[in-house]
Image 1 (cartoon, one colour):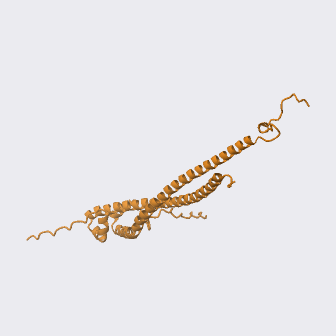
Image 2: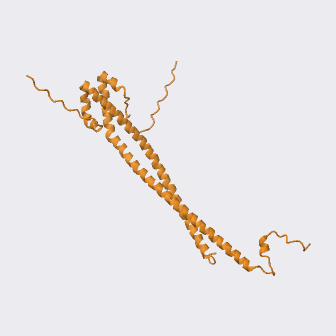
Length: 143
Length: 106
């Protein structure tokens, strides 16, 4: 081997901690450990800070959603009250009223013309928004 | 680690605590969101019903209006309207003033 050539070792750490007089450079090792320790603490502190920030943000969002749910609950109760009141108090007399008018129209054809503008059917005044029941298709005419 | 680096140990414990807190808050957030979504669906359904209620009220109001107009031409309609006087009053129709009896003429 040619001893005049430079050291081919690519490892800089090996170069740094290369024994100058046959023993490891303890001062350099200590500095490196201190640096690593500081970096670990820095990373841990950053993680704690990040998680705390995320927790505060999520808590704030959760509070907003909870308030929104409470408002929706209040609105829902109010709407239920209004619709329930309509179903209980208004629908019966409206049905009776329309039935009476239909009966009156049967006896008075001139009023029947006025009533014909309105399509009154049974349960039409209910507040349900369910789709109308489908009518079965007419059977094919047999020849 | 904790013997030689107490700060790192404390930070690690803090980090784990924050992680659990985050998980708990996240769970609560998802639960609240779900509840709010359910409520929103219910409110939308009730709003649809309210539209129907208002529409039906408008139809009945128009029907009553026509009936009252007709009763001016045909008094027989009064017998139909009479039982619903209170309800029609709630809809904004005034009760018809009773016509004063005609003075007796000699």
